[in-house]
Image (cartoon, rainbow, N blue to C red; front, side, top):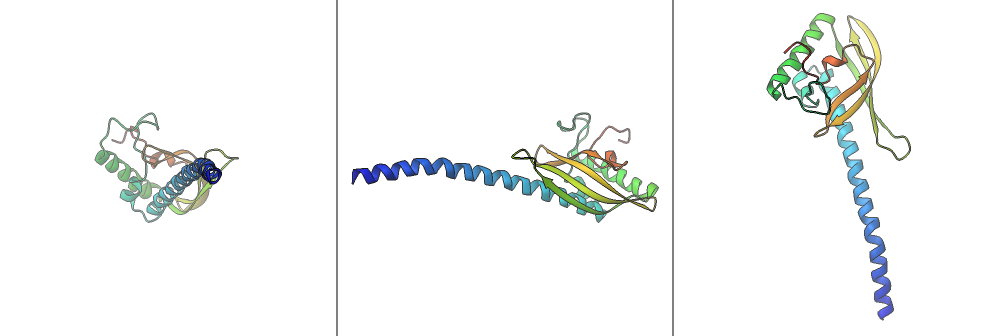
Length: 162
C-alpha cells in the first residue's frame, strides 16, 4: 500500500510542472490573440473613419516609442491624432480600404505581427505592408510601413502639429 502512495506522489510531482507549463503557454497564446484583435480593431476603426476609436488602440509617444508621451495628455493626443487623420483625408483623399492582420513565428520565438493594407491616396489605390509592435498595455505601435503617411497615424506626437 505504501508503494502505491509513493507512486501516486511521484506522478503528481511530475504532472504539476507539466500542468503549470501548459497554463503559462496558454496565457502567452491568449496575449497573442488579444494583441491581434487590438490591431484588427484599430484598422476596422480607420476603415470606418472612426478616428477617435482608432486612437484608443495606439500608443501615444514623443521620441521613444517604448516610453509614453510626457508632453501631451491623452485628450490632447487624441485631438492631435484625430485632426491629423481628418486633414490627411481632406488633403490627400487618404483612406484605408482594407486591412488584414497577420501573426507569424520563426521557430519557437516571439510572435511577429504585421498588416497588409489597401490604401487610397489621391484616388490611387496602393497595397502596403506594415510591421506592428505592442507596448505598454498592449497598445499598438507601427514600427515600419510602406505607407508614406504611417507616421501620422501611429501615435507619434511632436510632429509640429500640436
